[in-house]
Length: 112
Length: 113
Image (cartoon, rainbow over all chains, first blue to last red; front, side):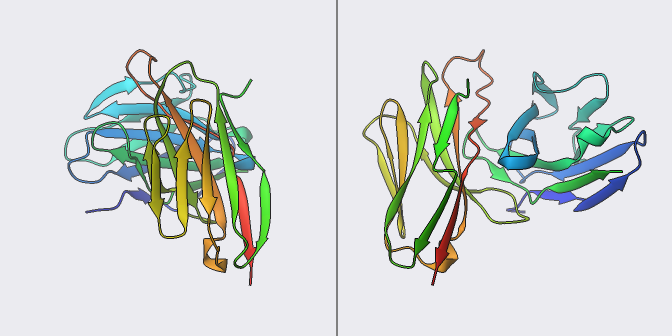
């Protein structure tokens, strides 16, 4: 399809629970990016993939965050033992050649 | 220090009142500068990519320009449907090849009828 599909749209988790977010990139796009948007429109880069390989993970809090992009499956971002400060909107974007990103509509994660 | 700074933070215009949004950047080498529009509850929607100083791109009432230190998004005779947050993002040329864009905090535009 011509859109990046993110599921679920909303996710509520108790502190300490696991959260898993999914992203189906545009077919044919080789690059997938995850961003976290918190208050005041601040976009924080988390991780990027080129096909199924991690391309850049400099933004990932590695102790609790993990991500995968496996062939023929949606990409996923998993947060183990969520904390209150993980509450944010998580955006996935895909790109054909590493620029001109197309974003999904995001998953709003609320940790209570 | 932020690498990408957008101003103003918020802008209110009357319908038909033209204005400009600014995005200044401090990266040492620019690979690309992107403008996005974001509506509430949605992901950013791609508008333009600019690659070199002097480049200009237009789409309907929007025109983006680029210099060596900043970019402007000019909005001519805006309409209420142009109300949104406009985001600027910069790709640095030399970042080990990952080219991850750094986003500014956006300008929230409201156009009153």
